[in-house]
Length: 372
Image (cartoon, rainbow, N blue to C red; front, side, top):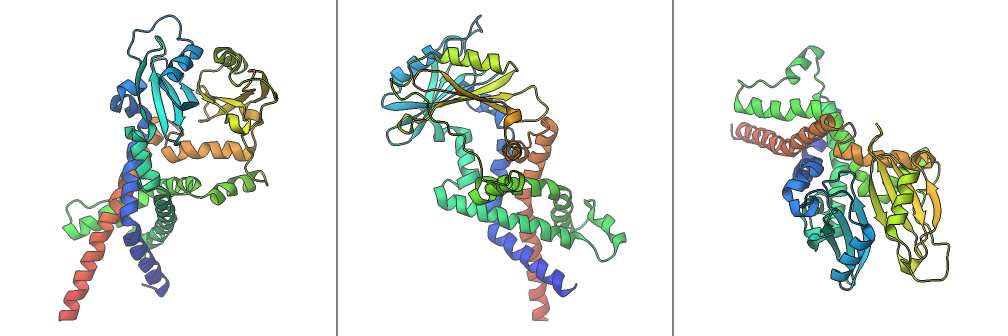
């Protein structure tokens, strides 16, 4: 083995040992989150699924807001989620005076509040907290971010180490020999799946870095738009009157008239202290391109439309950035890529374990040689 390859192997080995625990946690939680949309109604049926027989009309959103406000003492509504799937509950997110976020699940046919609770205590929020922060806040975010960078290096170094001296020997590294010794089988389980999953794992790692580092996210915009990330914030145009003096249902009617496609809707209630407007986003579920969102901004005082931003008018950088989530979660091409992402996460989780046994086996072998 050349000196260069020896150095690469040492980097691959020790970097793998250092980030092994965070990598296992991130990979396992990532595998769970791949199927969050499918598993959420099973994990928390009271939070995601209506429990009444579907009636002719949806319960008015204005009345849902009133019901939530009556129970959400000292809380402010921040977001309202209305999924295109009519079997899903309306989710209303609030924040209390301490900044703790709460979620209310409302039956969209009866307006009944089915359940409520602290948002970050919900099952998939806990899993996401582990995935992104290891449940230890900014310190965890730093660890997962550095581990993600380290994993990119591990993937690249692993591909270099995979290449045999003689091309004819590559065939041995393309399939697992199940009848081999335990030592050889462990080596195969590390090398073969790792090779097949390398490109998928690299895509997951590179997109994951977007949530860890603002400067990394900024590269997307500078590379495509030649300028920083545009702000989604829009101020209200009116300067007088109280906030919320309008019908939210009328606003939604305007949004659906402007964008008549089938889609999920998210209402962002602007920060009134900073004079922020209401932003309604509708994600087109009929498009082949995932996460294709269009926006309508309304004045938070009188409900007047301020501006409309269809997906086609978004900058190239914004469009590319919106692809990061479906790539990272494997949802970009539906179930096939979700399954690929799930399998890749399992391979990522197993690689530090099989890698450790390879290292331990070589260490034992070296120790025996020294004794002789």
